[in-house]
Image 1 (tube, rainbow over the protein chains, first blue to last red):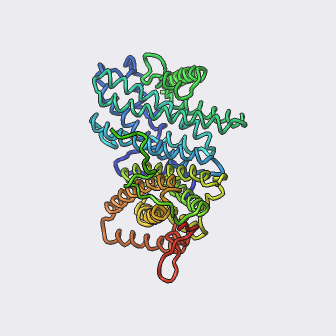
Image 2 (tube, each protein chain N blue to C red):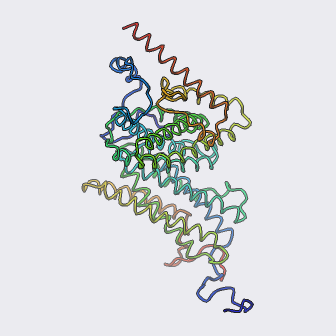
Length: 272
Length: 223
């Protein structure tokens, strides 16, 4: 088996449909849709499209969990004990089990919410963040940035379950949220340990985390405003080792990302 | 009411544990080092394969089993210093080059169409060999002096049996034609030949030394 498995080769059965994020962003239909004033993007059970949006988000969580499983699995294989401590590999194996369980939960929840595997397209950018050559970058890109986003997403979905009177959804999201806090804490702890005497490597890793955080802010997808579909879960992120400064930076990154997306959209409109 | 000061034996009548065992401290540590090595190689392979198998159920089972074997490696890693091996890496070695060749061959399949080959190597060849070696250790070691190893062996064997059963069921569900059955049998035979050359997961003597037609214990015998 080769080391460093590329995202294009991730194995899926025939139900799955894959597309690229750029195809979605530059699809003129999506650009036209984004111009409509639909009010707050918050996942609100009172809005007619809430159920459909929740199903789409749930499917996104499912494919994200598959890729998180694959990414953690590759980290157990891609690096030997001369490159990373055995204990880190053991933590990644533990994460494999957790992500595998999350996939199982997500499949059951998808059924519960009325969607099917493959109903929505999959993008592989989560796994791509798990392909870095430096294992420390995988820890910041995946465990701190993406698993951190998962904390925000699961907390939002849990609240949505509570607001919409769906105890099954709220129950499952709360369990997955507990695991994600563990994964982010793993990332925070290993980052500190592995870069204790290498501030340059730590800075490179944190810069990669900022890049991934910005990418996944998706034009204001995650933030602290009422408009943001996904809210920053401060309390759980603190439990996972995020400092106040890091939380403030995340809010800033999200605002920047939103401003950039609006500018890009305006430019496309002018050019049209 | 029983008299609290009445002398009682240290071993209750139903506690039949005995001192004799076929492994001394050094032999036990050597075996535990080999166990750690093979568990690491196995959990790495299972983790690496997750991305390469298209079958969703197989993918999720591999993710779960990856952790089981990582946990076993951790148990053996923790046991080594208790067996006077203060450098946990020194004994984290294969017993011989032949077992390395087996592991390389077992981990070699990469393509999405090779799930049968991947699973057969693990669940029809390696795990049965692990169950045999662990059971030999469990049955042969001193039930009093080596009881920490026995406790770990019992936990590990429970996982091994369950994982073997689950893996075997996956293989059976993937074999749909006589050609698939032939593929699985061929793969098992190829790997079994390599394992035979290695002599088992701890090398020759994994299940005792073969002498004049019967197996005899290996290691510091305490009778």
